[in-house]
Length: 409
Image (cartoon, rainbow, N blue to C red; front, side):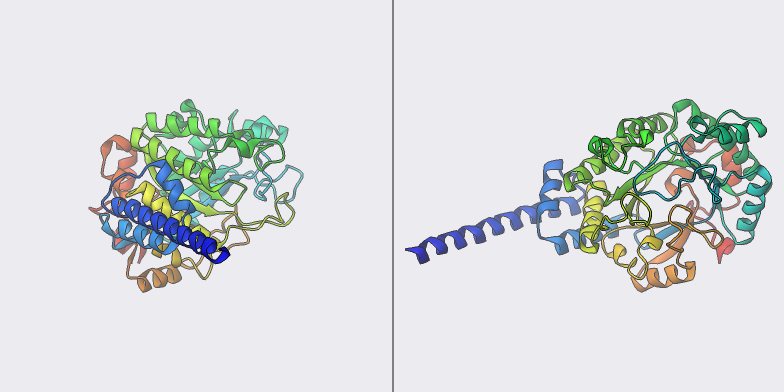
């Protein structure tokens, strides 16, 4: 009797697995055809064990997109205007307090000098990064800005972006955290694109003892408003998720759908970064295990299935020696890589050389091309780029909207 009972259980388990596999295969087959899958179906993919099918499907979707033979990157100089920040995230080492010897508040002269070095190394992007609204927390930041003739960090970014454009020709892309509509309007004519990581749409991560408890700007309501208003202003925008900071698989899916729905509404999200959390000594999350590679690959694959033809990036410096595997999971971009400056947000992870990225990309059967800090599809559509900025873009770009190869090779 026991043998009969266990035989029935085993048969049912086999039957349930078969039904699940067939269901997953049906979802994946429709996604390859370019059909939208539901959120419930995405949850099912995340729960399934069919990782190899998910990843191969994602690869096929990417390969079916236009220009699928090209993988892009942006050649940049990373300009850290200031690392003072009002927020305190449990995983961050970027933020410094004014008394810290590593605190930075760059002058216009220092910025232009660094941008000029970037120009010599054939960079096209000036990535301007600051902490979140440091003037709201630190007297030193207010005094620094006052000495420069400004009352806010955004006013300074607008001025320095103009100077970088006029004096070096490099194209500014600013990541200053959450911004208001008025602030983004101020930057629209001197930045070819803006960026801000959503990180997660989960309100839970802002609760007590969670990573964003002491980071008011990381509240998803604040970040979603910035994303929405950037869309209303038709600003090409980079966003993404930080994976492994305590979010659930369902919350990852929800965050991806939020991005997808905003882009469907406004068409302005030029790139989605999938960034794996790297635990840092001295932080509240130093003992937190990073996301496993196999699960990360699966998430990347599901992101491609959900987002279809949107641009997806995984930072190669955060995945040394294995970054080529993300091409197998459907990404089409490596993000900004600097031949000049370190990654100030993750200084323990040096950029791979562009030569090595090219070698890995070629080894996977793709061509590596430099892009501008604004993606080709936005370069080619006038509603996203002002005439003023178009005059600065024109010398860099070819007929496809990518960087002219003679300028970087």
